[in-house]
Image (tube, rainbow, N blue to C red):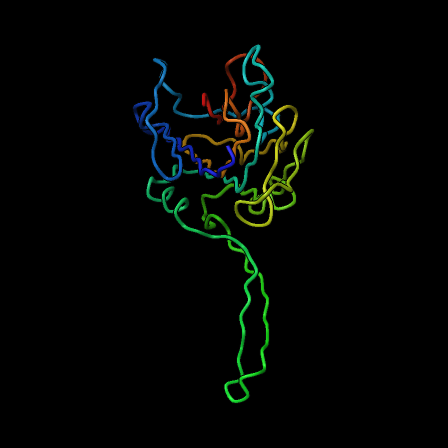
Length: 231
């Protein structure tokens, strides 16, 4: 808790085995995953008209408790329509980019007395823009999509004024009823290949916490959920 981590999930339905179809990275390092016996589908399906959510889903599963909603901060959420490589994920984690104010001083070498101060702000994206980037929510004061136009709306205890990891702010979620709702759009039907990456800061590391998801509610089908299970 209280520390930022970079998370990425990469899905490639063209590959044959579960381990090759689904990969998860934390701070640029691929994680070892345990899979159920069922083979992961080769393609994700259209979730109808239900909204895409950051910090929650419509219904995690039949009878799931509400405390799975995200409790903490989320920043720099990006969705791609391709499976990014391990080296690209590592580069996105390792590259230090942020915005800030810098001060420089110019000295009159003859008089050695006249100082001029220049303040400027430089904003750099956490991830480079590519043709495969679908949406990019910076969380800088709002839940707007700075790249694809899939703007989000704050619901319940969600605000985009949390302490930033990059940029000026992050999304802050209260763990009970707060999430960002993004209207359904064909671009968010992720299909055979996709990548989701984000920065997350846990207020509570216990249990199961949802980063984001898209579903039709109820049961265990017609949904995908990106979440953390266990401490």
